[in-house]
Image (cartoon, rainbow, N blue to C red):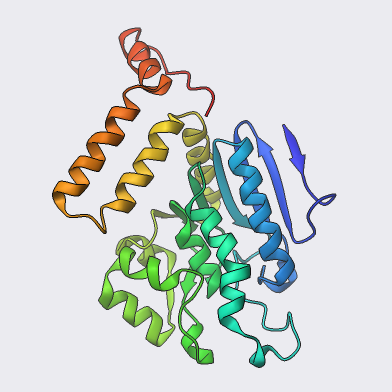
Length: 264
């Protein structure tokens, strides 16, 4: 096990454990609110995790996952060009998660609000503690959901629920978020750490090349008609059938043993 921590990053921690990269937001006194430095460090850590690990987990230190933008990060916050901030600072972070070559899990240990909620939704799988909640707070300060929120929300829960979450800015408890399909699962707080670690191990030990193509195929389906999607699915399946992961899985099945997936 190796660890890349404070010698490189100040606002986050990045640890590698047996093929799992764990990125922990580390501003607990600010509920892990996002400042300029944290966004840059997260984008860099996500890139490094994609190069070294088989799965990435993003979580928070302390009682919160991420409370969103730190409004006290800059003087004159009301005069900042938010379009430029989103393009230059949030863009590399959100795209890094969305385009990562490995599965990304958000382990939401506490409140996820604003951009913090949408960073979680950018991940492939969201596992939340039952005490956590999700909140699109933007309308309360005269803004719209950002950090990918207008993309991820309606695709996850449909237009009606996305509209209500965005307009009212209400808290959505983790259990209801799971019932709505916004996240994968909500688990009791006392089981939370063990559950996300077990899920991360499962992905780290699994067929990475298949996971890559699963993510590609499911995301493309929102924009394709049936024939286009079927052709894309068929092409990806042909590629998957030529990988070492598939061949090893077939051998393991025939030999009645657990597959041993290695490499990327």
